[in-house]
Image: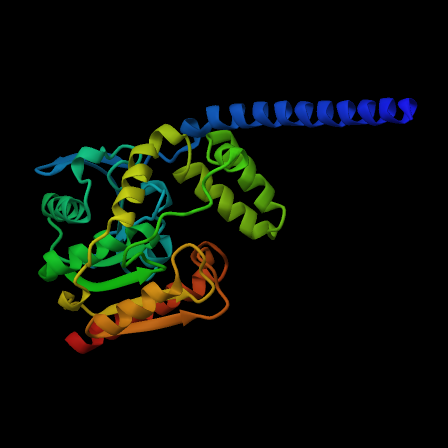
Length: 308
């Protein structure tokens, strides 16, 4: 019996040692990966001072029709995308929301303040009106912008957007959960998740993570503020939106419930709900995103056809 216990102990120690060695190797991989992040960020964004504060932005295209891309939680101007819309004859204005990357949280901690910041940016750039394209955590400010500055909004696009209060998660306690909320733990969790993805999805996730998630020092102010704002979000008075609106939302979304889009579509006048059947929160970052973008272009074309 003692020999059996001795062998069990040896196997356990060997197994534990192997796990420790693997984790150390993975940590060094993460360390050097993170060290190269800043070097690999695109250098086509700039910071401009407005009367509401500093903001990091990027402007693509030469059209006099503009789309304002408002990223989610977390994110940055570097994941605002929009190249496909430039190909469709739009200029695309991407931003880093307050608390993310080079836009300080002091520039706008609430959806109302953040909306005022974007209005000041448009003033600074001499842009009259935009199609507002808000995704996920960019939903509340997109809605607030449309309500507070209706003359600056040609159309409102809400993609898997937060439009009402979100309850605090109940599964954020425990040692394992705490580990996966650390920088290394988050990175490791993403690597594990990628083992279940197709190659094109892995490439897209890598692109997003490298440009909008790390280092945590670039997103922690915005992330903490978003979480606080969303759990204490007051009614957004959706009935006050006057701009044509389209809501695109997956019915299998576990991050922002599909009910957000359903409820918003009922309350927003002149709103269209596009239910993405069988799709989750990350549908916009996968190959199906091209189909969604085509639908958005059609939405814009329908608005312009009515104005003629």
